[in-house]
Image (cartoon, rainbow, N blue to C red; front, side, top):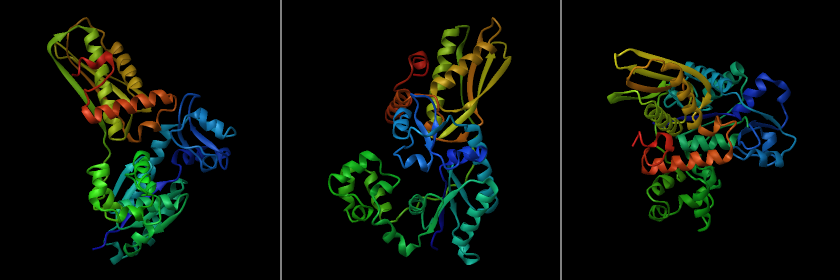
Length: 382
């Protein structure tokens, strides 16, 4: 049976949410971000016409578009709207995967027997826009890769169907930049040998691609040829992540405990970023030597940044550790999670700090989570 996979993507999601609550922002160049040293988290199509892009330093963005309206951003609002869209889709779709805060995959395979899958998708898109007020783009095709590229080519506020027999003619003329696996470094590498379109890439011998970029070469060749067997994974929201440490000997060494908490916060924040989560609640747990257990929590703006989460966790520890008694256990938990990428929430962090996190994450991904860390907590997690 031919698969029917839909990719849906909310158009300039943060911008659209802000415009829902403030109609004065409609039609004007809008940048979501914060601070002169911060980065652009999202921007409107009016701002993109001037060259503004996500992750661009705010100073550069405002030089390109000085008339832009800048809004700090409200992750709580974005999370609420994302949840609303998720509920609308879940009510109708037989199988849904939530890929990020504003991106969804649906598996409609077999629906053509009873009801046209594309017609059904159009009706769902209309329902989402009517019930949420948010514009959405989508595409229906035979797999996740083609439908995702199709959505990108349909933006803004568009939709299309790419049937099996039309997949290759759709893909061939497009730039390889349109493929999800191709970043700037890979694009530059391929460009130097004359590979600039998906059609050219699809005609390359697999062995050559593997020599150029390693084991991903075969996967990239398949996707350039419209082949992608990745399933739509049923959606389930993760509630929390946590770490605990039971001391080999009960301790009153506050410096040691604080170092451990800082190290836990760093490792958990790295896990959040890798799994594309943001947290809004920090919970500290301690257990005294007599087994009395206490917890304390604090709400924060949605984030996955080490320095913010570690600071809050240490502040909570200072408030909860009130007895002059040895500790048996300490734990840290991040809860109330929502899907979102690291740069989404750094409305006040500067570009240098973001680059630092990205570099540390790359080292951890390659050599393990204990390969690099902040000095305050590094020794306690090795």
